[in-house]
Amino acid sequence: ESVGLDMVDFAQAFDSGIHKHKVLQEAQMGWETLKVEGSPTFVLPSGEQISYLALPKVKMDPKRNYRAAAVEPAPCAGQGCLDLYRQLFANVLKESGDA
Image 1 (cartoon, helix red, strand yellow):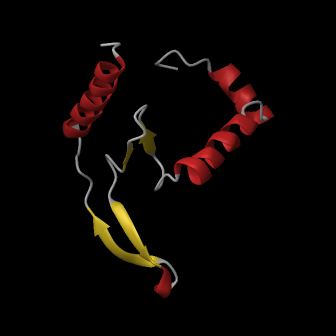
Image 2 (cartoon, rainbow, N blue to C red):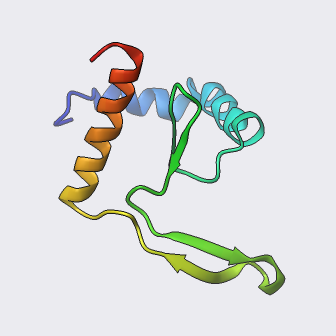
């Protein structure tokens, strides 16, 4: 609500499944066509994919029933993440000529 989201409309759309098909279609495209590594992943207009900006990356071991085998720390935290996202979007706008 604090960012202008109409919660009544959102709840109705969410509960009715109005956008379910589109969400599933985009998820399938991500998995099958774009081969995204995980969620969240930003896919830039250039095709570059950026995952795990603010999250640690957990590597699973299929030989051990997909238990965590290693954890890579997140590349940023707090204000550093905000700065990374801002730079990411600024670069995309610059590359597209909209900056």
